[in-house]
Image (cartoon, rainbow, N blue to C red; front, top):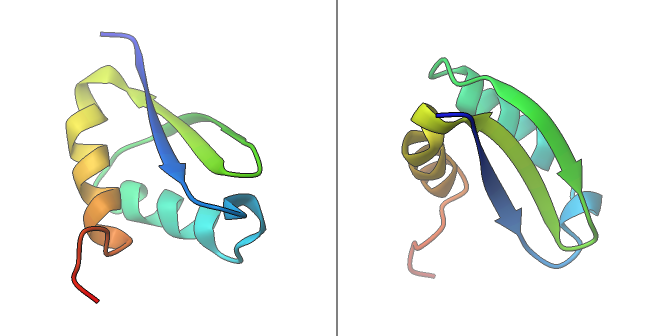
Length: 70
């Protein structure tokens, strides 16, 4: 399937301590390898195997508490 791009978006994302490590650990804990990474001032882009795309999105969504009330 090739590679898939999974992007974390937020103001000052690249300056937030621990975001890279947290994302890598979240995915690695479930056996998903990050093949490449890049960042801008508002996003971190993780490249994963295409077959892992949906699971990676779900894991990061849950791992960063996105969509939670509050």
